[in-house]
Image (cartoon, rainbow, N blue to C red; front, side):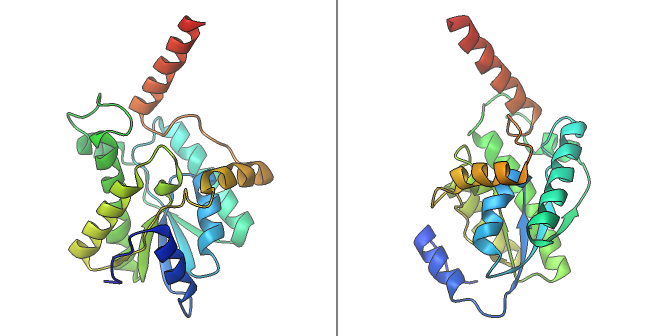
Amino acid sequence: MIGLINDYKEFKSFIQKLENKPKLFLHACCAPCSSHCLKVLKDYFDITIFFSNDNIYPFEEYEKRLEEIIKFAKAYNNINVIENGYNHDDFLKSINGKENLGERSIRCYECYKLRMEKTIILAKELGFDYYTTTLSLSPYKNSNWINEIGYELENKYGLKYLYSNFKKEEGYRDSIALSEEFGLYRQDYCGCEYSKRERNEAIDRAKEKN
């Protein structure tokens, strides 16, 4: 274990002291979220992106986000992208009984865990030094949950987790600017059919008020 990093200041201090660019397996949810994260990490790690997002619905949306991240990773720093296929049933099983709890609920916790566990399993298999995720960049994602899961999986599988809270230093705003610079597709819902439905319902309620 690398020792528990508790905040972003400790994280920045830690990566700035690294030597020889250790290999990092970076779980990525989409190109816009990856943009700022890669900007922060690229000088300190030898990065491979892992696109593992069984939550995304429908399949056409999954394909669109995958194509976009491959395009961006190549243009930004010629970074390799690995994906593990579309296994939406894995997501549905992971949130069984929690489908209607809403965004930022335990449903999302289980979704984070599913994707991060697939990441660490493959990272260990492929011989990476660290794993982490871009998920914490979004203001809609619970960074405390993400880091809790990250360290729990580190203990379970014996591969080092890199602390993640990329919304710091105006990370989300920077991702918007980078998306504009590179012409990236920015989705308007998190990914799953439930977040899409909830967003549409919120839009309908807003229209009714007006």
